Image 1 (spheres, helix red, strand yellow):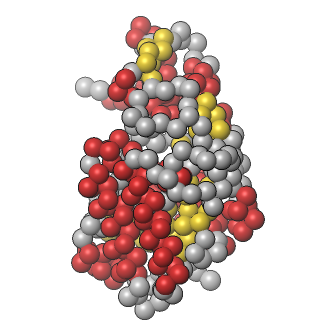
Image 2 (cartoon, helix red, strand yellow):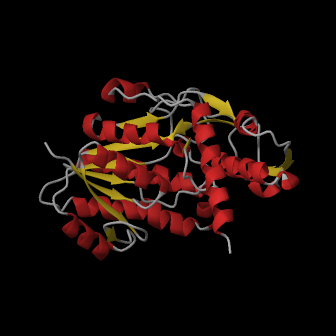
Image 3 (cartoon, one colour):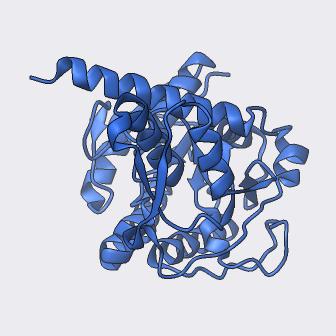
Amino acid sequence: MTHRALITGAAGFVGRRLSSYLVDEGWEVYTTDYQGDVDHHADLCDSPAIQTLLHNAGTLTHVFHLAAMAFVPHAGRDPVGAMDINLLGTIRLATALLDCPTLPRFIYIGSADAYGPPQFLPIIEEHPLRPQNPYAISKAAADQYCQYLSRSTDLEIIRIRPFNHSGPGQSDQYVLSSFARQVAAATLHPEAATIKVGNLEAARDFAHVDDIIRGYAALALDGIPSQAYNLCSGKARNISYALDTLISFTDTPIQVEEDPERMRPVDVPLVEGCYDKAKLDARWEPAIPFETMLKELYDYWLETLQAEERNAP
């Protein structure tokens, strides 16, 4: 059977990698975003635009819904925009899918941020949703709406809650990519080898983006409708360990400075997930070591910064 997928948010870091992965696996893929190199530009805040998108996409077997305001500080500064994109955009898209002659399976990409401060560890899917910031609130609300819709309609919905994930090509807005870029810059310019950091004591569950997209594809095929699934590494790692590992890739002495601008108003000291449910239902588990991901990030930024300097006027 040929699988044909629509990917929203396809111009983003994860969307681009998911699209390439699915094509390599033999899927037909139709991509959309509000900008970028995609098959169709669509604004998910615009219901008529969604109808046009679905008409142009043709008959679909799956929809991977990645489009979101994904950077927590941005959502904090624009909570109305976060709700419009992350919650109402999901509602608009899912509602439009109900009018399709053949209902595709809807894979909602949520966030483990929706769990909030852990009541127990590791975090399993039955953990209460206690979101602590506008981004997490918007994703938790959309997750709950998808649960309602999957129980009240014939639309098959798989809810996925990925934990932190990174890899080469990720924006340096995110902590690991930010560290990697700064270490790479220090390698090229030892005279300015200072790194700005936030809270180094926090511990997070980081997975490689390529493991996460494998999980999206596996759960799209074998996940149980109406169920939620964690995707994670299953191991918490201190931010300080990640920084120390990245610094070990260079011979440049580096000074570390705390930056108040990088501190979150509400932070959770320790997050660790459990992926047993995805392993049981879809035979998925992470495969790429944390240190490999960090080395790939460092190499990516070293090559990127070198190329920028070569091409500078």
